[in-house]
Length: 616
Image 1 (tube, rainbow, N blue to C red):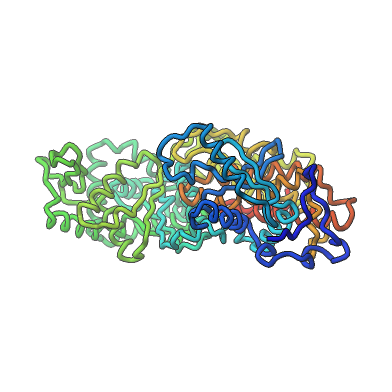
Image 2 (tube, one colour):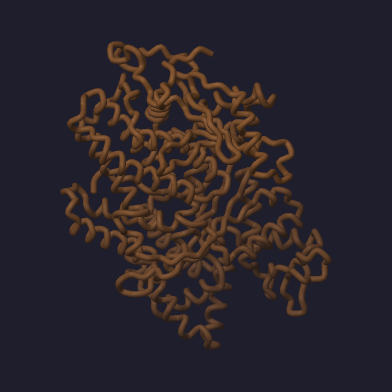
């Protein structure tokens, strides 16, 4: 194929495109149609196309082996690389570094530069490809600005991923116990997974499965009869019910309290009108307050379900277990299911109390069966802390024993615990205290910062920045890891924090506002040849791979790491690639680059559950 660009000079510099200035920019440049609309995935396809002829493999088999190279501080790096190991037929056997290097060199010698690839080199066991610098700038920026919120999501890396129906259960607080900090992780992780799946075209149902049934309601009911106040229940339900629960808990071991609690719960199960009416008030007032808190978090649910929905259906489950010969009675009269391979009761799950009433796992079984009948989903996820791993293992095993093959498609997304979360007043019990603390600390930081400008709604802005700080600190490591929370670390304005991401977004937005916020068309981005600009473009190339990786292992840390690097690269570029005072053509091109960065930054932040701010 004849090159559409002038040859690369000996010293590695790119000559300006001939007559580009007179022709009014890139849209008039004589560019082959295939490349004019090229995105990052099409660069891979172009490389795969040439490789397929030499390796005698279909291009589709090669695309995922060609990955964008992470940006290096050395800067002089290629854009894509092919790992020789990934295309070696006998890849199960170990190859020496020398052997892989030799294979890489042999393959590289057979490849030719063309209109897309300007340079081919080899690394340790890799063949490296450098994209023509003018083409890189043109196509990456064109694609980001054209696809906008869908940039990276349209990548052909996702073409083989089937669109699915996913049911995701997350948050799931207990009514009458305040929404504590442990639920924050479940809420933000579940929200991230739901956001990512929905963005990738899956049909997502978000379920909040409330702890709204069980013996604790007997205790709470008795407590409310003794210490409750209907006005306080209306004005601050979660706080008041918690206070009542704490008070009655002091007498929980007394025989009279135990008897009264048991009687209250029995009446509840028998649908006694007065008892049920009080329980309904507990539930509806609590849900109203939860919705208000979720609004602060930017989280919504498609369904509010709960254990109470499955009180009767759990009896049907017990009947099914009995009919299938799975339910066994112990000497104490409790019902169990044997989960051991040898059927020697070395592993079992208790599914029924001695009085015949259901347990948490029985209601979970009924809920899972009901959800699958209702939604007919391809995957059902439960987002809870890792202490519940055993519970979900048992749940899925029992479903399988009952003959439900879809139990294979159920997944427990577990996470570690947060340690050291305190407010100025001491140990945290409630989520709202954390949100208030994040907001007030951020307001204080904004008031004392010299760079803070007058902003329209400082409280709302502080809330969004504070939440970003909480989310980024939480998402930086593996979800399964416990981590030590630190307010000082979370709220730093420089470094790898949510505050820094928000600051970068606000700064780039301000840059666009300052320069008229005009629609950029016919921009000659070919002049973006500085190392700082190339580093940003190379990083933008990798976004689809990062999304793909997170979609595969459901870890937000890949996206977090990507956005932090993007922000650091943008900070360096902002200092060196000045818009103000530059020639109009150069200023427009740089503005175009910064606009692309801001768009991708905003897209990634929204997936994580962060609302980008435009002022701070």
